[in-house]
Each structure stands twice: as C-alpha cells, then as structure tokens.
Amino acid sequence: MNAILCTEYGLPDKLIFQDVTVPTPQKGEVCIDVVACSINFPDALLIQNMYQFKPTLPFSPGGEVSGIVSAIGEGVTNYQIGDPVVALCGWGGLAEKVVVPENKLIPIPHGMDFQTAASLLYNFGTSLHALQDRANLQPNETLLVLGASGGVGLAAVQLGKWLGARVIAAVSSEEKKKVCLQFGADEAFVYSPENTKENVLAFTAGKGIDVVYDPVGGAYTEPALRCMTWGGRYLVVGFANGTIPSIPANLPLLKGCALMGVFWGRFAQTEPKKNQQNLALLARLFQEGKIKTHIHKQYTLQEAPEAIQALMDRKVIGKAVVVIQDEPEIPVPEKREEQTEIPASKKQFQTLEEVKQAEGTALGTSDWLKITQEMIDSFAKATHDYQWIHTDSERAALSPFGGTIAHGFLTLSVIPMLMEQIYAIQSSKMAINYGTNKVRFLSPVKAGSEVRLTAHFKAVSPFGVNGIKMTTEAIIEIKGQTKPACLAELLSIVYE
Image 1: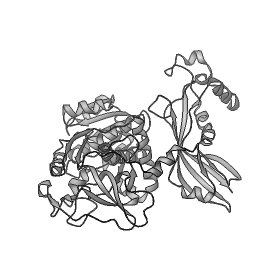
Image 2: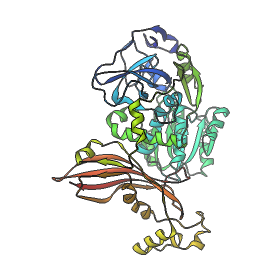
Image 3: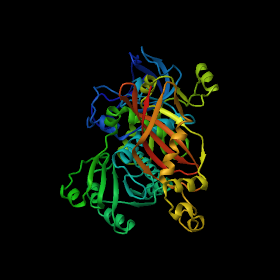
Image 4: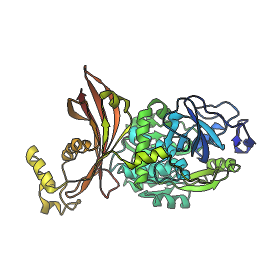
C-alpha cells in the first residue's frame, strides 16, 4: 500500500511517498481503508519532533481519518467489516490503510460524508472542550478568537455563538475576515500585535474580553492578555505562530484572570467518557445544522506534504483534506437493517448492572412538549412566584421576549417527565430525583414553545446495599432555536 512517511525529522519537503507493508490488526484493533485524512497543526509538529507525543521513526503523520473498516482483530465487538468510521489515531493516517485501537473509533453520524467526517471532530472536539469544559463560557460573555479562520478557530467561532457568547474574530487577512463573519462572528478584524488591544477595546466599549481562545501564541498572546476584563479566562490552545510566548506574570495578577491550558488529546485519554459525551453532542449539533466544516482545499496522498506546508504557512482557511480514495457508498450490514426496522420506543434496562455498563453512553431524545401559559400559571401558584414576566401577558408582550416566559425551575421540573420517555429500569423498586449538580440556563422558554430532552449517562456508582447513584447530563432544546434552554447534570438514586 502507499503511504506518506516521515523517515527523518524536518519540514514537509523531507516527507516521502513510499510503498509499505499492509498493517494487520492485533487484539482490540481494527484496520481501516482510509478515505480521507484532514491536516492538523500537530501533524506539522510531529514531523519536526516538536510535539508532546513522539512516534518512532519511520511513521506516517495524519491523526484524523475517515474510512471503512476492512479487517478486525481478536476481541473487537463494537464494529464489523464494512462499517463507516472516524478514527482519531494520532498519526498513521496519511496512508491507504491504518490500524487503530477499537476505542479510538467513532461511527460516522447519519448524513455525514467522509470528507466532513475527517474534518469535524478534532477541531470541534478541541474547541468544545476549551469553551465548555475549561472556560465555562456563559451567555452574553465576550469571546475573542485568535487565528479565527483556522480549523479550531472557525470551530470556536461557531461553538461560541451556540453557547450564547458575543464572538470577536481576529484574523490575518480580509479574505479570512469575510469567512469568519459568514460563520457567525459578530465582529472581525485583521490583527497585529500592535492593533489588537485598540480593536478589542473599541468593539467592547472599553470593557475588555471575558474569554480569549488562543491557538496562535507568539507575539499575539500578550496584547490579547492585556485586553482581558476582570476575572476573565485565557485559553492556551496552541502555538501556530511557531513561538511559545513568555507571559509577564503580573498581568494575570492585575486582571484577576486565569490562564487555562487546553490539551484535548490528554483530556480524551484521561476522561474518555466525558470526551465521548462531547463527541456525541457534536454529532447531534452537526445533524441539526448548528455547526459545519469549511474545507479549504482537497489534496491527493502524494500532495499531502504540500497540505502540511500550506497549514504551516497559514494559507489554510478551515481545513485542508487529503483524499486517499473516492467517496464509497456506505454499506449497511443486513443485521443492522433488521435492527433499525423495529425501533424501541425507549431504552430498557433489566437490572442495575446493565445501567452501570451503560455509563458514558447516550440515552436518547424525548418527544416535543409544549410549554403552555396554563403550565406557567400553575407553577407560579405552586411556588408563589408571580413575577410579571411569567404571568402578565400584556406587560410581557412589551418586553424583549415579546411575551411571557417559563420559570427556569419549571423548565427543570419537566425533565423527570421527559426522562420517562427515554429509558426505564425494570428491576427498580424506588427512584429518587434528588437534585442537580450543575445547571446553566442559556435561553428563555416563551409560552407556547415546544421543548425536548436529550440525555446521556455521565456517571454511575454504587449507593448503599441495593442502589446506584446516577449523574445524567441533560440538554433541554427549544424547537426552532439554535441555542438550548438549559444544560443540567441531574442526580438520581435508584434502588433495586
């Protein structure tokens, strides 16, 4: 088979195109016929021996691929030959075939083509982890994205908007500025170390930035850090500029801000269940049209060194993709067809042990539920919360919402009812919903809106003699809106 090989460390012109032995999957591994491999900044670092992970020479760069499973090793149970998959393999992807551990595979979501699949998860996985898990970006906060037209940058722009932030994109050309505005940035400017602070303060009326997303480094870091507001969060994502900056330690002190490292590869290794939840969320956001990729250019396998060089030269807007074979038809195994013909109305667990085994997996999505004014009035009566924005339709019609809105705790209170549509535990004798761990209200629910629940098992642990404690991650969506109503972690006890 053909592959691009790094036989000595250096720049992309040192890479060679060579015929190599076809790899054989071992226990717990699969072999993938690679269809597409996207180019990421770690590829440029790996071939120069400048990355945190250091594969043994010779090796093929390319850490994010899509393709078809062509062989499976002993013990592989979750995939079959013919399955379309995405693999976050770290390296080895710039080849016609690559062997990957089973636990690094993800099924290609329905409706996604192979080139998109190879371009989505690395960038959006990094950016979701950065903005949601590290910075805890909140609605109406201001986000500055440096290098905003790159792969992770455009992902951060879109996810920042989905999380409800005001997004300012900093780019190196007018062409890149135009793309960022098309992808949802509220403001964009062509930046330099000299003009960054001036532009940011103008866009924020002198207030400064709540969160900075920095995959660039070099001379751009300190000016952006000086733009931060009190209590801000500075996300150190990478150093595409080529230089690791030295930061004056007095700046975080004077700003009362936090410097936060974002190392998605390490996060995926040490917190695999949380990472799988993030990837499942990204797949859903893509299917709903809330995020999308931007493919800058397609390259052949022999042209892969040119793609890496273009990335290093900062010529790539979005993603460069190496296409290794023509887009195949996605085969559907006969067994899978039979399974999809009889969908289950909700997930059924026979025992608590089955629930434990489902830790970290998606539970499903409920039906839509209409939030009526009658429901809102009943909740107000039960809680003695008669604020006019909830109960006075005439006055609320003049508000920015254009009508009454549901109480935040009403939105939370419908979750157990919607959860009943998603799963059941047959052996349960008693279940107690005893609170929430985290709640973030992102968007008000207007009277007459429809909402639904998407849930994941985040953690399951033993509780007492015959019980389990569950943490369920819930997302309440509003029909017709991009931004969800709320994100919550629910705490429950179930006894058998």
